[in-house]
Length: 289
Image 1 (cartoon, rainbow, N blue to C red):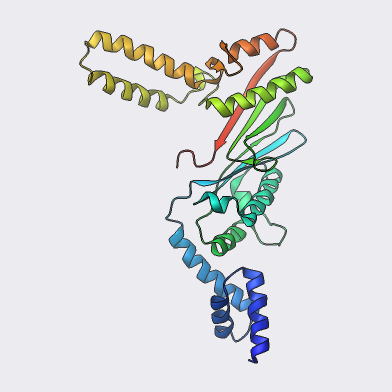
Image 2: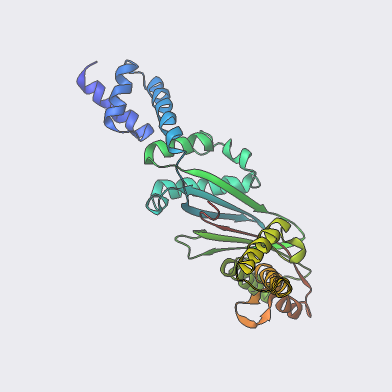
């Protein structure tokens, strides 16, 4: 193959795949100048590299929110480093995936198989992005709220761009009347959820496994203190009750006025317009990884 033609094909392949000169030249040589076969070959090599990378921990990344007509989606995409999370390719990939998540009602399997603007599915574009950037990148989780009987809110803490950041919240309120005071309350509640990390709406909604694990930790801690068994029982009961109060939204101290509980604020607003918290979802990048 003439040198000029070879360089032209290498340049074209690099622009399509984002892969380096040496790998592109090797692929062109191996496929005798066939661009399509070269792309397939590089994808296969890229996937082999990805499989090695996927054993690494990706606990950085970004949260994306997309919303339209009271429908809101929440997406977490992870990378290994914060540096990559601020890469333009990573951010733009996340934006498009977030919009697709909204159209797919947050169903992650449907999302992974949804076509993006370049006519490739999300999962294939994800593989391409890993090959190009050289880090493990994962579409970790999605959430979605849509209900004609609720008014839905979203919030991103310390956003780097509109609806993009490290911590995102979705909130659904049920009420008969939508007014400025409700909109203000929805925003304040979303900010409270971001700051206070509730695990559930109320004691009844709290996962028993979480409570039992906390009880076990408290009991072991107290047993090691050498206190009397009867005293240990009383102290453990007080500690577990505090844990439940601290981790259930309605029982938490209201961040704007800690003298009140969230349930007190809901009661105050409900005097003129009955309000019910139906659902909330909170994603923080890397949480639990």
